[in-house]
Length: 79
Image (cartoon, rainbow, N blue to C red; front, side):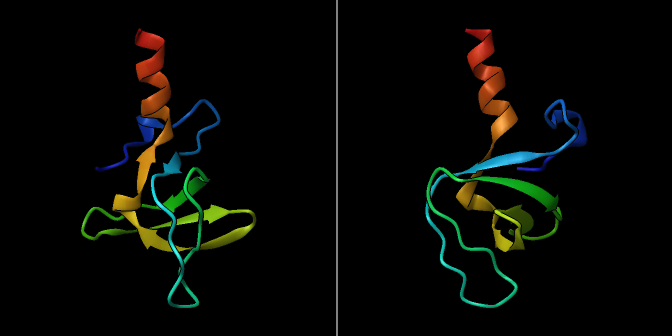
């Protein structure tokens, strides 16, 4: 999944919700629980790791552990 800025929420921030828990293995990684909401700070298209911020902490995490929040909200509005 590639995050395009036009798919960001109305505040201009790209938000994702976590699908699975992740425990950081390195100091530059971000730990989270299932259902947390992360603000994306970097989403390189050439790799499987994104950088985001959660509870004031910033770190890298596997992009396949998250789903873009604005897309889920958009689908609900269409119904």
